[in-house]
Image 1: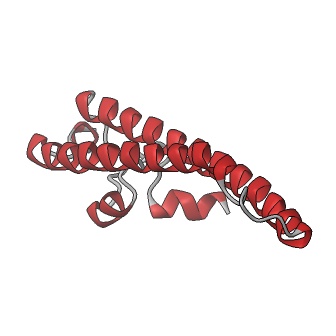
Image 2: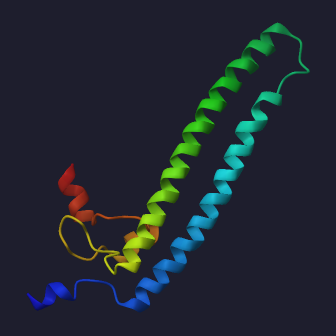
Image 3: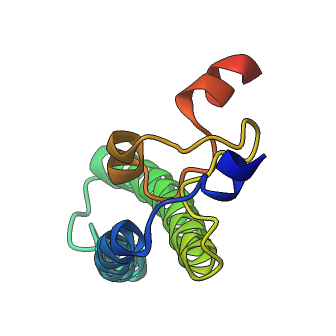
Length: 127
């Protein structure tokens, strides 16, 4: 029973993960601004071209890019929320503990997916 209490990353490791996550949040916010500005500028494209075939194609691609941009923005917002939730887990000292197995998620996985709440083992069990 005593070993379960120690199933968490030491504060030093948590500090390193916190830095990584804060950097990822800043980058994600920057990317979100780029996506939003691209979305806002989409309606300015293609107004000079008067050829009907090009116009129809351009309108179609504008609609497609607006949809994909809004999907990208939603995904990016969720990513930022997930990262912020990971920061809360760091404060609670529960970061890096698999919510299914209770074991530590590997550092390698956490560096790739810093908001992960499942170990590879638990993820494979879900399939």
